[in-house]
Image: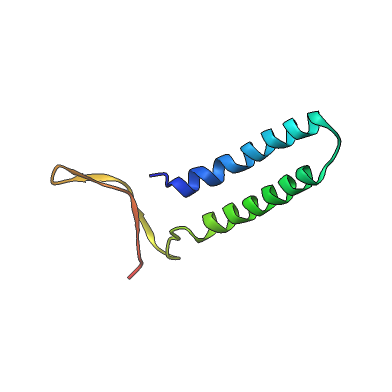
Length: 82
């Protein structure tokens, strides 16, 4: 399930690019464009950090695919090695 922060991190660089293009059409490089570039790089770094720290699987674990158990769907998961 996508979380709101993940969607925001996905859409933020796209919004920054659109703002960049609009401001660039108005005039040459300005402090606003430089600020947008810096904000985009920060959002990229935040997104990479977010994705690297999200739900890691234990090393050596065994993947158990999604299955139906007792009429309920059990999502896929990694079972730690014993």
